[in-house]
Amino acid sequence: MNFLELTQKRFSARKFTAEPVSQEDLDYIMECVRLAPSACNKQPWKFIIVRSNEYKEKLWGAYNREWFRTAPLYIVCMKNNTACWTRPEDAKAHGDIDVAIATEHLCLAAAERGLGTCWVCNFDPEVMHQLFASDNFETVAIIPVGHTADDCVCTEKKRKTMAEITEEV
Image (cartoon, rainbow, N blue to C red; front, side, top):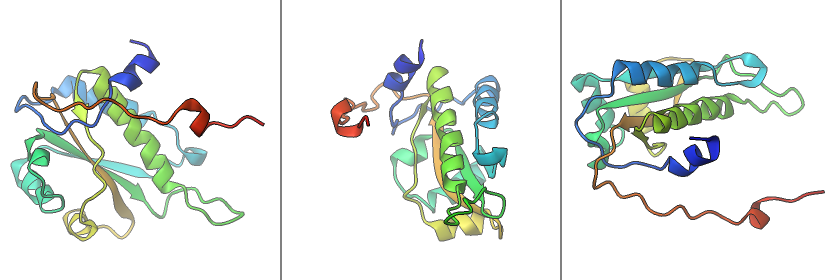
């Protein structure tokens, strides 16, 4: 499949089967994450793979939705606030952008392997800080990963037209 087909295939999956994600698929996905670009190649990130039932239950405390509980694993995407590149002209830190690029590599790599994902940013940041306490790292997103259930709703993609999002000068 080409890149356009891959982007058309990827959607926010909100229901998963109990089938575990293979180590081979996880290794592939994480290698794609590892190779993601970042500003000045700072790579200001850490990705925590959550498979244990103990930590899954703790994650559910940060985002308690029934569909979220169906994922066989989660990847917590974190940025290092002290290691990200900052634009000198206005002190804009690029950590969120860098982690977002790597996270979308994760989602697209998973889709290529036939797995579903969903960006979860609507979590309780205090719970996440308690779970993965660090002065330097902050959770940006939680990505559930798994085999999409047959009855998982995949709504038609509704996107703005090209004319609405582009301008040529």
